[in-house]
Length: 98
Image 1: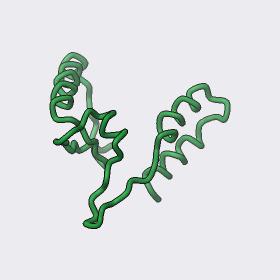
Image 2: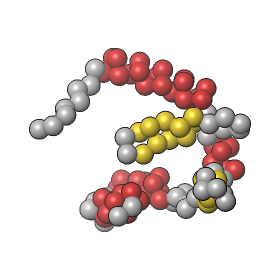
Image 3: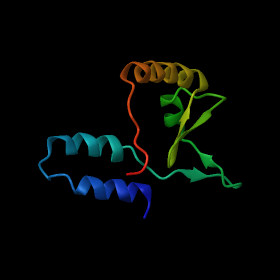
Image 4: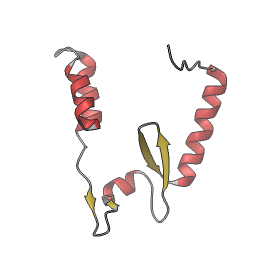
């Protein structure tokens, strides 16, 4: 089962009249589309997504557990600094195992 199918199944478990379902579905699925591959098997990122991510000639692939994100390197550095600052203040706990 694909990741998108798993997400769709999870949203199916939300109540049909759940106020958050419409927003969440729009955010996750409305702009989703299959990506094209070039002749060597590399993904081809559509121009509108490159523009949205502020990517021109250099992209940074950032691991996110079972997935990854593609960022403009400078934008990622700024976002990462903000995230680290928030985490230092919040000091969250991550439980591994049971």
